[in-house]
Image 1 (cartoon, rainbow, N blue to C red):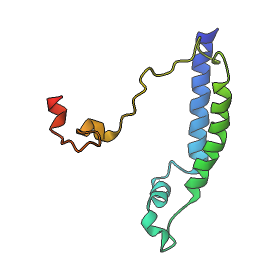
Image 2 (image 1 turned 45 degrees about the vertical axis):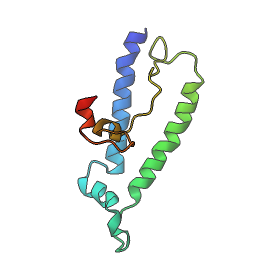
Image 3 (image 1 turned 90 degrees about the vertical axis):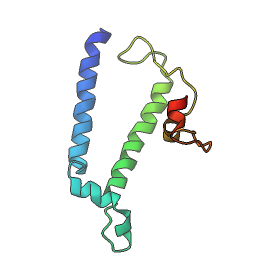
Image 4 (image 1 turned 180 degrees about the vertical axis):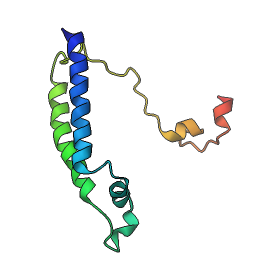
Length: 110
């Protein structure tokens, strides 16, 4: 039963995500660049509409995660899968030093 549900749930999630992108206009590069161009705030050319799209996404996602964390068994899997690693890695870790003043040469020496 679970193996049959997974493709249907994945298809539904993909369709919902795609519809959200299309409705919000995030498929238009000019709209996305208008939002990312924060230097245009002073001239009035900044487009804040995608901030409302993100806020709407958070308004749906946060309660869904709250509900999912309280479930014992997920909808489409036999058990929840959580990552085993607990260390926090930053992009600087991969460049060497990890915020400790290292150099890019640390990558090859470790």
